[in-house]
Length: 264
Image (cartoon, rainbow, N blue to C red; front, side, top):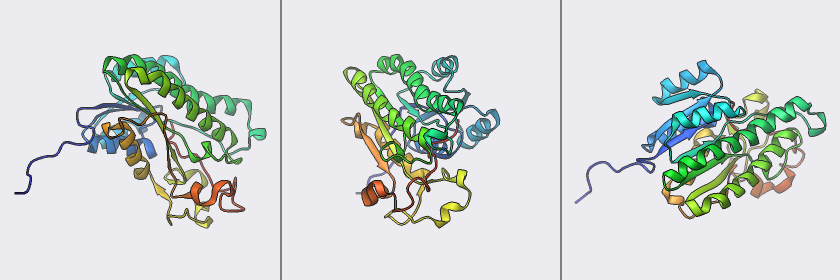
């Protein structure tokens, strides 16, 4: 006789805090979490965009800038208790490292690395009190194979991978897991380049990624299905890195990639 009744979602009973949740990948992550029956709080810097996202999702929202310690502390306190932290907020500029201004360099590192550090540090006591939990960082494929066209962004995402590893080691005794997803060419993450993406060869799987592709990977890393997974790097790039290595489609190195994380 076929089973009847409702099957609980993969995150049923879990509470999550998602930074940069007002658009793009962060919005898709929040929506996927809600579909898996998690309770979700999103943060963002732009008040109007954040409010609009919260209305669409039907979740709580807290206006906060991840690079500001006092904002992070307030957001953590208001969102607590939670079992899952997603460090998704990110920023970047199109410039080689040697052409990057000091202000841009410091701003990118403050958000992409500093924001993740501040949120993770603030979240640790919350997760320990819950008996463990998961931290998932949205990095980028350029953390693994740098793109000189977004030099500072590449450096910041590579640093985020090591931060995730250190958090995995610090958190292991308390059941706190930390891992990264590394998106490749993701729509709508390509919006910074307008329509130019149409001229570039596609990844081996034959299409650009969607924000939902990344969200699915984050759900796995946040769920109990990955209870023995920590310090991991899950690449979501359609086979770009596997198929082309550091060549980046031969001749397209440094010319086809844009930051894939959601804006603040």
